[in-house]
Image 1 (cartoon, rainbow, N blue to C red):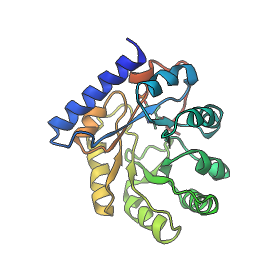
Image 2 (cartoon, protein in one colour):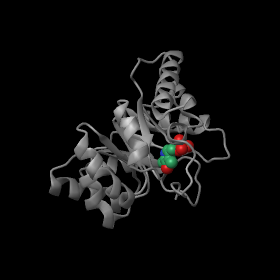
Image 3 (cartoon, rainbow, N blue to C red):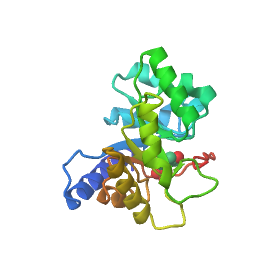
Length: 227
Ligand SMILES: *Cc1c(COP(=O)(O)O)cnc(C)c1O
């Protein structure tokens, strides 16, 4: 199977899941997670029409994406990995969507950089739905208040919520919790679902699914993303 075949297959599965869930075709954005893969693997997906891509490390993305973005107008780059405030300037310059806002320091740094650079990245609050000590994200009980504080204190508009369920658990309850929190917070977007569970996530209302290995194949280099 070529990369274009895999993309067509995933798109078909997304459309089927949208239909089964009674949602509009195109309601779900496919974010192709290209971490650890380089331009020769990414280019065939761009050629096949994919425009939304996700990376989990600012440094790695800064090496790969400026040239790819330059070559193809309309690329939308998503940051899906943890963010340090000393990388805020670089992140705001490079990324169009940031899925991992999870503390006041980051929210403030991103808001300040967005104002300084005249950019307006769409932002998600990452929620640690499994309360895993090693994982990034705000506690579920703090998610609604934190999203409000992002807007009111930091002047950072939040589009939605994001989660990475614990690997050893059934993801459904985590997706349901994220949807409930987003409803409480009055937020429309839900970034949830990966290669193994994106159809389940769509059934629970995902608006953005982050699919890596099902599109690119197995990653060989380590890419810690849950930290
Ligand atoms: C790597 C990663 C993905 C994609 O995972 P796959 O299982 O390869 O689809 C999705 N979301 C985040 C936050 C990631 O770090």
